[in-house]
Image (tube, rainbow, N blue to C red; front, side, top):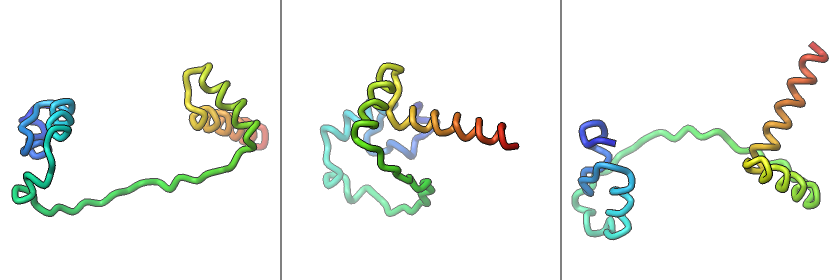
Length: 93
């Protein structure tokens, strides 16, 4: 990230990269700069996450299979469900 691209994102730290911003805030407190801040508002649009409980033994199997593929269990379950739904759609459609 260059200053010219996102100057308003790092005016207090005067950093050129996310790593520099992180280092700056690791060493400083916002309370030291409170008088230099301004109130802002923004909208957050986040999709609602829905949870489906799995039997603990089944989850262990999913987790093991996912890790062996380099995936999170959530990603693997989502892939499997999507594949199954696509199969159902093509066989019924």
